[in-house]
Amino acid sequence: MLYRENGQFKTSYRTDQQIFTIAQDKVAIGLLLAFAFIGLPLLAPDYLFKAVLIPFLILSLAALGLNILVGYCGQISLGTGGFMAVGAYAAYNFFIRVEGMPPVIAILLGGVCSTVVGVLFGIPSLRIKGLYLAVATLAAQFFCDWAFLRIKWFTNDSSSGSVNVASLSAFGIPIDTPESKYLFCLVFLVVFALIAKNLVRSHIGREWMAIRDMDVAASVIGIRPVYAKLTAFAVSSFFVGVAGALWGFVHLGSWEPAAFNIDRSFQLLFMVIIGGLGSIMGSFFGAAFIVVLPIILDNLGVALGFDTALASHLTFMIFGALIVFFLIVEPHGLARLWSIGKEKLRLWPFPH
Image (cartoon, rainbow, N blue to C red; front, side, top):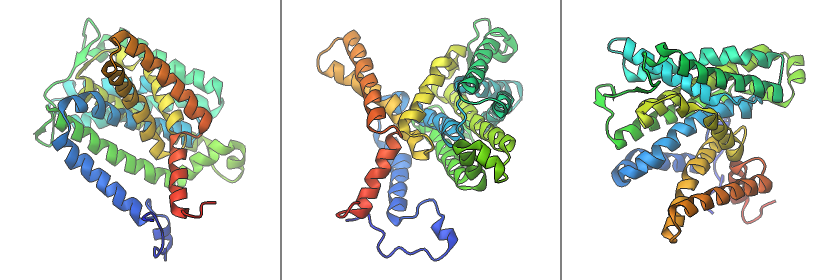
């Protein structure tokens, strides 16, 4: 009864095209953000920040960037972990080699470097697609793994290939507690989610979706495939590079190239597929499913009295079965189930 549009009229194109067309959505998002910024820092324990919330926020940002490329533009990518590594190591080098470099600027510059690399490896998308493009982006993953492992300059001549970052601060505020790290990542995610939402609503977002649906027809009506595909790679790589820098700087603190291996690329791709291709909300659902659910299943297995090894194996079995179940029930992802539920609420008690 509360989720209705009665009395909510649109009198201009501007109001009709706003992000939240229903007033209840605005209120719900406002309450959610207030709880995320104020409630959780006061109530959540340190373990929840370190093990769940911070990884969820950073991987949501990475999934958001990958969804722009795969979900909105239809360009498959298996090199996301490599682009995250570029962002992390580029931000690290800016931070240690430039005197007085603020961490925020270093993180953003890491995203810029990831953009350059992403565009370079996105050039093959102008001529190939599908499985062949996946193999080309997979080459980016292997190249980045090799470069950061073998070229010592990237790791500041570290013999082990491991690097570390300490004494982070933003605008004079130290980022050394789990709460401050969580809020730091949350600000990045909110800002970039708003940017992504406005991009996919704009003309460039419509060009991406036209290329995704049928690139030949898109070129016939005047859309430039070169511009659309390369901008999708650029924006996606920037988001992913910033997420990689946050993963290294904030979550890990000390890392090596194995932190961004091919498993990370597949993990992010699964997030996008399970959450929902071509959906901003789907990126959050997919990250929650991949990050939070295994922790819940592990703790549930231990609470039921299983030993640690058995609980871990049961987690993999149940987790895989749930992935298969959700893909069979709704191939368009969890975001589609969410939108169906909202549509039924808007039409209740006469859904059709």
